[in-house]
Image 1 (cartoon, rainbow, N blue to C red):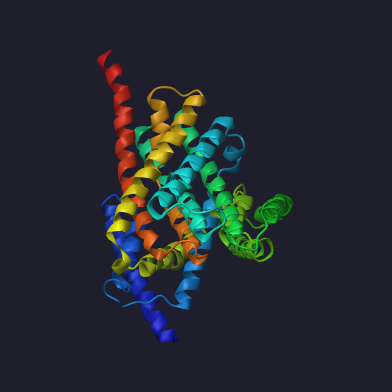
Image 2 (image 1 turned 90 degrees about the vertical axis):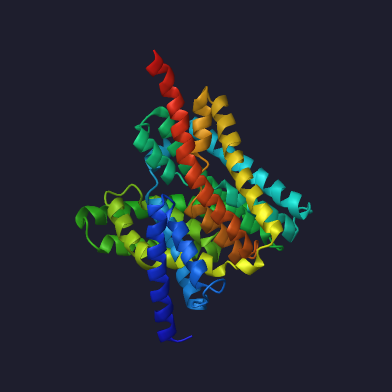
Length: 395
């Protein structure tokens, strides 16, 4: 691997990723789907003009960290803390039911395994992938319908934010338990220690950044220091606590999310992510996916994976919302609103591949889930809200 070959690969990835990303957006599909298809096209499965090397793999890893940092920056911490018990319970059900459903689905296809075996952790990880919620498409749909600021819209948004936090915690625990030498008590203790340290240091770091933000508002030094915090906390999380680096990046984003210049920091992070690291990450998923490895069994599993992932969210979130006092079609709206998947599901799947918990073949299932959920969610939400209007119009 030399500099010239790296430059050539980067040029190909950036051009193809952006072109196919724009095509996907024109077709009302998530842009990331187009970038993944671009990676699949230029990779060994189709054209074979780009091969994933160590440099691209490292860049993809940085892309994941930046994506999770941006997700943390975009978290409304005040809303998260004051969202109420209902959103928390709905989010917990939205994680638990898909987690169980995905685990049982894998075991139904490939056999039940004893607790602690590699196959058991693979089954659990399939469930972990299903827990993630991407609320961006739901938010756009609710905005279009004028329902985002309603009690229902706020509940869906809050539950989705909490859902991702819980999903990252579950990911952290599963990766920790996967190590054959790990002690469950030690894993739990180290995880709690990291978050306790994050709360204490996070408060201090936030105060320091607040002073800097007040003295030098809207200056480049703020996003530069924020990026250093992101990388530093990612390193500390994995190196000293055995927690996924993306968890550290997400926590770093949450620490800074209430700064006056949080949007400015996120804007600067998005430039790096949008132009180079994001396309490399999503294209790398396509590069790692080998079409020749897809069997009819995997096609059938992918179809079942999509069905279980969608239905599990609707059942889990819908049933809990009914227990929390929502009635009629509102429970179904919450379930449907929570069933979209996006970047977080891909990031979790990527992490599982890195840890050797799943093979690259299962990216096919995840990509299919993102496409189907992104198409179905707006359609179903509009149909459900259209039903509410009919009695009013008739009256």
